[in-house]
Length: 156
Image (cartoon, rainbow, N blue to C red):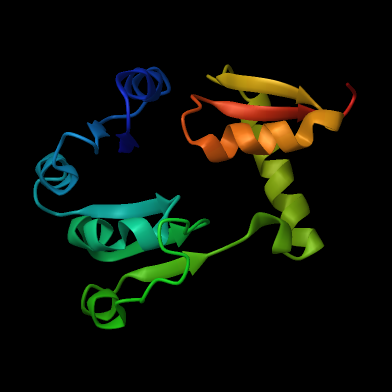
């Protein structure tokens, strides 16, 4: 399942292979997810905003599921609803990729490279910046309206 904030993002998710696309701005995410899973709930969520999404995320999680967290900008110091996580046996996994020990980071990079070279992939580049324009690249990401990845080209 991929949550989508625009028709263009939804179409991009479909082309990339998403089985279900939900526009969280005007659709009931929980109802759609529960209908799609036959009421069972979702096994895995990779959350781009744990603090901002936790109330909704908890409602759609299945028993013995996992929430992987790599950002929490909507609420940078969220209250973790431990009792609700425990009652559904939800595992909470958090990470900052570049804080991983070097061996694990290298293994992750190798796995990503293997996946990328295994076949055609759909990659949408929203913008490219020279290394000297890194501040503008950050602003492009923080603005929040990009469709795709912002690239900083260190060779430029």
